[in-house]
Image (tube, rainbow, N blue to C red; front, side, top):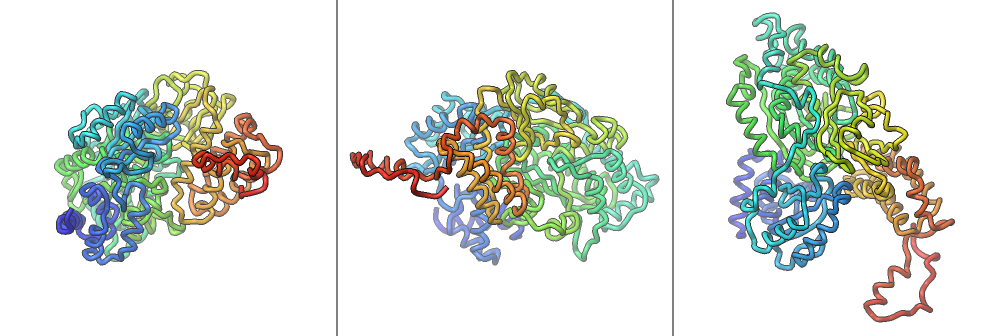
Length: 627
């Protein structure tokens, strides 16, 4: 494409985002969608128009897995490499497609038409194997469908003309409760929150509080905040922090001149095995957006963001259509519900393939158009968040629950679940079961009950809350889902007795190594060392010495890593060693330390190519290399 055409595309994108460098990630995404990659000419134009150093633009683009600074073809195919996809045969399907297209994994075809590679979990574990084609999701892959995709690519059929059923994504709601069964009329929760103001005069005063961030003694916003606290709602992203306390801290944070309060919905569910937010945003988007607006009312916010993971690109247009209707119905925008000064709106920002952006401060960095590097804390987002303004960040499920609390009251919600875990929890169930999908239960449900409901038999292990969570064995299946026992962000992955739990843990370790942002040395190096140790065990070079090394790495990562990714990177290994030790012991073929590098094996391919077989000259494999 000519430089003039590239400049025209870039200029249109920049105008749409007001030439605001804080929208850098979105601008890069739209440029790439138009050009298939981010060419040097586009970066030149952005540098000149935004007055931003070229190194910063390239640094941001280089951070995210879904941005390409080199051509990757008209068709950019990424196979989901989550453990459940592998269990369903994704690797064989990847090799089949590569064979059909005469291409190597990770490479671009010689004609520049297509590339095929792997990516982390795509949030389709209930209907895998799955792939992304130019960030469009295709689920339920089969050998027949792979052949069809290869033919479509070879024939250069535009993606918009591919069969519609290729892109059909099911919700697979197997058990619904108060959230997924809610008969919710848009605006009802806002009307209920407003009704908690004793009279219109106080209500008007509270709208001034919303607009200007002034303290409000009684009435709608404070009463709504009290209901959230009375409900004992805790964050559904996994950490379980009190939602009411978070909102109250943001409301009480002072504003500097020109500042406003911000509400952010974290829809970047990148934990392998988690897909509940995908279903909530598909089936109950109004409930989520209303919950965000209730939060804005309670804390005095005027601007909101949904940070949507890049793998859910296909949801962008439907969600924007819901937002447009809410604006038309006076449920977003200016003077919401006809109340002067009640102003709040929501915009959607797409991620670009970075698991670490699920951490709230890294997410905020990405929202600001930067690399998604977690911040040092304190200060916390509630006082110094998006563009240094008071900001609340909550999970999709948390906002959906907040809308129902505003509608029905805190006491109603607190009566559901357990004493320490109020409400319900949505579980993303996948793996070895007859009915994978979404299950919503009141807190307190046992792991055994979930297994029975989803048709799991001969279960060996359950990974709760993804790789960073906990792996439990059959003796623990009577434990309950709840903050007092097993907290979870939502993933519930099942493995029967045919699965090798060492290989499950190794897949998770590769995930953590791939997704480390590289900011801190302990995590960057530690996850690589851990991956190398697991690969060494897989090659049959393991010894008891390696267990001690894993323990040392865990201590280092937990004590010195910058964020939670490094803190939890060893969890899947330590859990499976503790509960499924035979899976490791059968790989401990050496009594003493054995190096990971085997010079003889490394030279074997060269011998085959040259026809040499200098067996008498082979070097001993016990005298070289590093572990």
